[in-house]
Length: 379
Image (cartoon, rainbow, N blue to C red):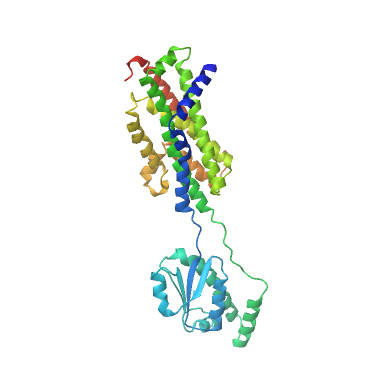
């Protein structure tokens, strides 16, 4: 145990001499958080609504007031001449047109003469259309249940002055936080794999410089040396995960959509998988010059196929089936399942699969290292 501690101390000292490399790997996931915030994190702006009132009736004035009372809307009256210009110039998201005869149609109980125009489609019209339809349908119902204009006006006035009101309020959009979490973790996965590969390269470098041979010639076994590298790897990546999750929560106020300990446990398990994969890849190369090529050939394509850079749903079904054999996909799928409200009792198999990936990678690395015992002839 003393010997292992000495190796750990020596590896950490080498890491600190990486001329900023360690800090770079610790803080570079923050760039992914910032990028995700820019893409997904902008607050939903107010819907800019222009109202064209050709009817110029009491009902259109009341409806205009109703629209102004909605949350997340910026409502302004415009002329028919300003309609097209406002849309094409991007000054308005939606134009509501009350045509002549609108009030009369509502009083007949058959609303017509209202038109919604937008260049953004349902994105801009759905929210307003739902509340506007509800309001006009209520007024039309009053018209159908009354006889004559005087009775309608009496009931309508009572409806307007009623203490029981339906109010619109904007709920917090948690979907954007889930998207930010997914994107940030996807970026973190790429960095963790790259960093694990970088740390594992120390084994190759020390073989090239014969340091590995001198260490194993001392009362230190090769197994102790590899275990020390694994421990350092796990410690650094755990710090990396804690730092990333803390910044996401404290600085950017991102709601993971799940308890923090669940996300940390999942990423800690993936740290184990990352170390195993990096050692397995290193075991197949015989020089530090060949390692980066293998890293680029394996890590980036597998991260792309598993959905680290974009949602896996956008890829063809055949590609999604290939992703089932990649650990990154299981991490992201587990995060999505947690965000959907599923518990550990529903996802224990995902954790078993990830652990099995790690064990398989370590077994491959152990087999390959045991087959190549001739450190003297290392090139």
